[in-house]
Length: 395
Image (tube, rainbow, N blue to C red; front, side, top):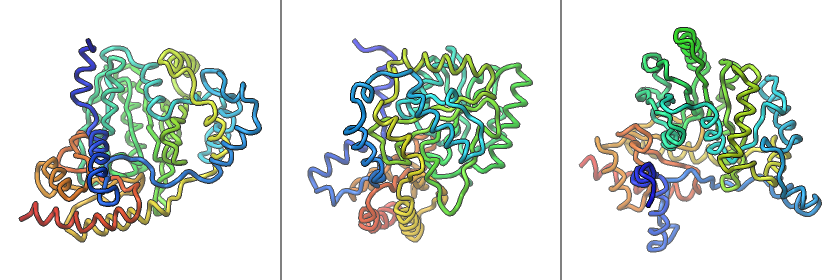
């Protein structure tokens, strides 16, 4: 009965979600406090208090017909105006409300812009390790994913390989910084060189290449690290943002796209993205949380909470003998497996009730992702188990 394409998607369904479901089963057996689930990037920090206050105020004071009703497919005009003004103040940009399209999270936004841009057979380049759903998102619209091999020295993009992989079929390049799963922030030098390569290739092939910046972790950067705003480096850039991590609202599915005027045929792209938002079935982003997010643009999640987790986990794992690039952002550690097959590492960890995700899920075997957006106690209590796992695997 189901479509042939869906058979493949079901067979290769997300290992992250599968591990999350496994964790729920184990918690029922051993007790949630005795299962150390590092599988899912589900924020453990509550949303800022202002989020609750604004939601309650709007529900009590606003006209319910308007608050819960339809609006322009792009979203409320006043919301988009506030977001464009905030971005201009923060990043020195020059956006208008017309450059903002409210979306059903960053995932919805990525699907909207890929639907807008891709013809069947167009290529979308990603840098391994990458969020595995990118492959499905590209395939949704007949796109082919082209993977730049990982640079495991520091997990900055391998630009020499990137340049070789750009072809006349290249329509888009997706970058994710701070990165899931490594926590690495792409440097300004990296972004500038990437932009130069793309401009040269556009001129060489007579094509237009869109740089799509997937930014759910933008606000989660540590030690004063600056995350470059990519529209300032390359004209054909679209930014996909989500409030899921910055305001701890993953289940509310609220985000936006930025489509700058500098982009080639920007008016046509903006118009097509609005139509894509509708015909994909999103219609519009959630009405209440458009308005809530617009009132909380200056609010942030508790970064110090995540930073303490990062420091404790990184120190504990490296002292136990694990190898890992120190993350600069997001809330993940990408740890080298003590044995060649990281799935053996994951299975051994599971025996100690520790759930981690194999790097092959991110097209980077030999590593595992550990999400530290959990309680501090989970990290402290899991460290002896991690130490035992590496002792077992190294004999």
